[in-house]
Picture 1 (cartoon, one colour):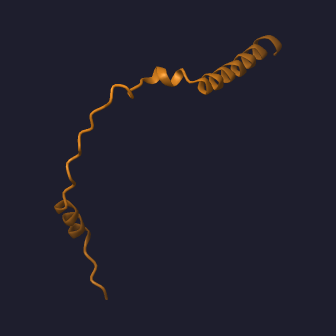
Picture 2 (cartoon, helix red, strand yellow):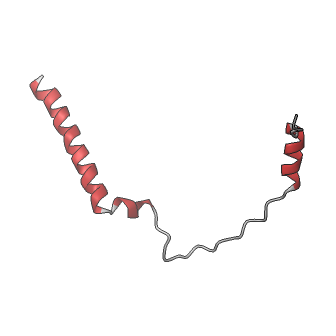
Picture 3 (cartoon, helix red, strand yellow):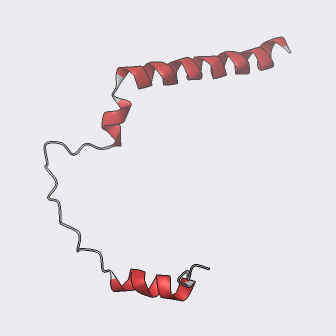
Length: 66
């Protein structure tokens, strides 16, 4: 039979291999944008307005016609 390493040995081997330290990335102030930038995109605003109109129509239907 093949001799397979045990779990403890595998964990110790992974601990011995140390990951390289992360390289710090300096953010570019020209490319940073907040969440308001996402709301200013036309496809998103069209989608949200269609959903809002559907909810408004459903609410008016429930209040006035039922």
